Each structure stands twice: as structure tokens, then as C-alpha cells.
Length: 131
Picture 1 (cartoon, one colour):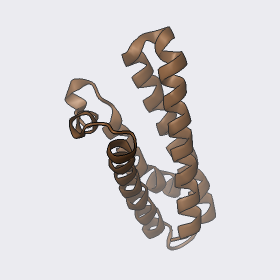
Picture 2 (cartoon, one colour):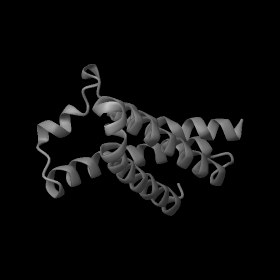
Picture 3 (cartoon, rainbow, N blue to C red):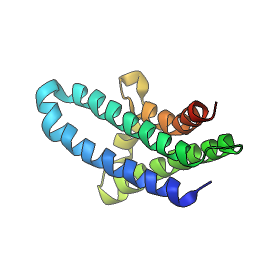
């Protein structure tokens, strides 16, 4: 796995997600409401994940692409979960219950779709570019 590239792309995704969260809460929520902003923010982050996965896949074409893609997907998923809980709770002071509530897809929360995209996007983009 190209660790430096994988980490750099994850940092770009994290920056996009943070900026997107700000724009979604400040601008978009006023236009489409809180849940509409939630959907908007989810879609934008998933698109960013797929873009970063495409960039990664272009740099890791070849025989070993599947292992690389799986490794980077697991890395991105793990980094995001750790970041969310560490920064969310210890830096921003969000209660554990609030952080865990974002995983309740049955309540309309779409965060698990972002996490799923981080896991599968490198594999899908790798397959797309290596077939």
C-alpha cells in the first residue's frame, strides 16, 4: 500500500468533510432544513470519497491492485471512525450518545453510508481501472 498517498488522500477527504459540514450547517440547512442538509452533506462526502479512491486507484494499477484497494479501504474506515470519536468527543465535547446516534440508519442517519463508501470505493475504483 502506498501509505503516504493513502494518508494524504484521507486528509483531503477529512478537510472536505469538515468544510462541507460547516457549509451544510450554516448555508444549506437554511435552504432545505436540517434533514435535507444531512442528506446533502452525506452525498458530498461520498462523492469526495469516490474521487479520492479514483485518484488512489490510478496510482496503484497493476497485479496487486485488489490487496492495495482493500488495505486502503480498511485504513480510511478505521481512521475516520477514530477521528470521529476522538475529535468529536474529546476536542468538540460531543456526548457519546450523540456520536453513536449518527450510526442509527434506521432513524434516518446516513453516516454508515459514508463509512461503507470508504471501505468499498477503493475496490470499486480499482476494479474499474484494472479490468
